[in-house]
Length: 274
Image (cartoon, rainbow, N blue to C red; front, side):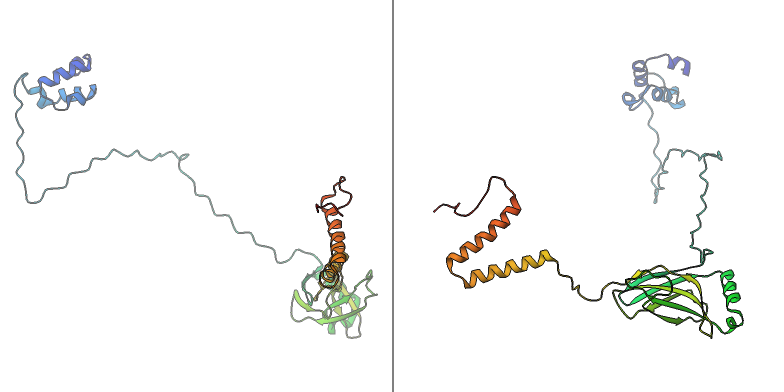
């Protein structure tokens, strides 16, 4: 038998041929498996109809070697450079710049009695202050001047009051304690000479501190509710049955009119059954 003869046969014919050679599990084999079994040298050497010779079993040993696990061949990794994933470099973490090249001061509110200011002043602005103050610049101090401008349109000279904070070192931010809550403030950062002259380097925005106490503004709507509650309490506790009934009916009628706003209801007095 050869492969060319076997491939021309049907599976049924191959099964019958495998029966003659006593090939086990022949009925469960596919066609190509039957051909492989029939082409096995040991099976092909057996005579048709002859009893298959039993294979000698090896003598048992003290330690049986573990059977080798048969695993399907693993597909090889692609070697094309296009298929290989390229490592993505980690993006640098962005950082905020220390300065922006501006001449400005920003004022923020922390609570009713504290503000926070930060600023940035360029060297050319400082040079302008040096030229303006002249020799007095050498003994001048950097200061924060805080203005109370509550209720006015501030023009730089009409503040209710102001106070100065002497800055130390190369500070570029400062916490400012203010004397009054519920007030409007703004601040200048500048150079104050020994003779009292003040050169403004930058002026801040205006801020308003919140109130540190309960508001003294009474809402009229809440006041009317309080009066009605007091009236109901007085009627229910001190008046006679008839006047109490009429007073409560009047209040409830007004409340119901506001809730339902029904055009078909003109009065609730006497509408109940007796």
